[in-house]
Image (cartoon, rainbow, N blue to C red; front, side):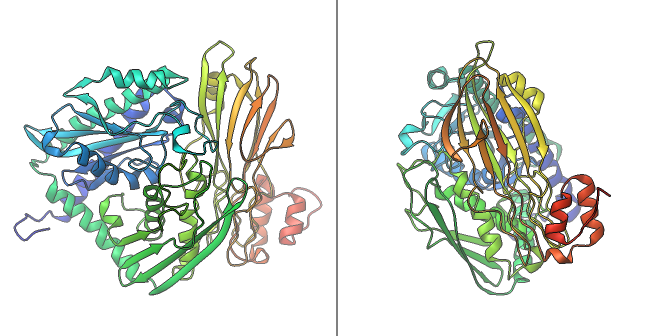
Length: 551
């Protein structure tokens, strides 16, 4: 804040800050309610961000994917290099799905609208959502280069002064297996940003704000100061992590070196494996977002996200490593490697921040279903299912809770109506969470039957099938994930055909346990048995608690 700038008192700052977050929540609700696909409408694979005129993120929708929040500001800066602020007009809408300028893969579209107050540009709203289909091989790990993965939209004007470019919509239609859903979701992004612009101007009018700059600096300054205060409490030093994680056929080595010095943190991923010839490579924009998210979780998780919370963090990764993939690397399933960035940082810093240390999560699996509904409509949509959350000191991991992302599962009734795939069984799996003084979260099993009357193509994207969620400080590992068709295990990252009547099963991984299982109080083990988290046999084997029958 400059010396000539009026000071915003703490009460006013809190009120306006809360109002901005509420504003972004309304934008997000507009996106969800106007979307056509279940990916946005039910699974919330999306985000919205409000940014000031200097491209600083100042508020984010509460229910937003962490990585998207970390990519929004860099995406806006790319857009403004193509269309400088002085060339923009009210009603313009800029969009791209470029992997290196957006969120790391082609399946997310980023849509921005400049906000004008009179003839002055005062800020931007930006929304991101995962589209149901953009052609190519589809959302999967199957591609070997970016050109296989679908439509790649360079930064362009999706609308000019309020007039939507119909050619771009036709381009999406021509490259989608479900054109109405895809174009509907694109239009939902346009709509929510128009709502966002109106809301932001109403906010400025209500508080008599002509320039968002002073408020933005106050919000970011508060977050940055709080972040630096937390980091100063850590022990200075360099902390390292190195471990293998599953790739497609061969393991991937992820290495992280985290240096804490004063009130800043530097993270370097030197030593990480190189890129591979499948769609699991990670553009640096995604790596940086997931690393920033890790530090945010360890410091000020309750303070709403904004650009100030990443100011004390510097992140590097060698060009050409799998965490800094360059074109034309295939990046469709970039989350399958990128999601390990966050636990890599957590594990590296376990010694520096022992009170915040967390065992590994079972994470989330995604399957892409394509085919024909029994009524003849085309299907192209995603199914999300979560494993167990990792345990912390004094806290059991939550069951079937994703980490480090937060997509939601599609309700059974909606899924069956959308796809005509019947969910025969969906149940929690006892003993899947890693034993510990604090138990890892348990996973689940979902069994689907193909009742479409047609073959259905399934692209599976799963991890934790070779390397389990690791326990911490004596805690045991969680159970591995498995995917099966008609009872037979299948490759976790592959393309399969479900014939009519075939069944596919997803057994989700458990989270790691924390602390010695022998230290878990007997009453908690008995509670686990009663609620089905631990079986009688598991209680005896893992905790030394033996009963003749269920208590």
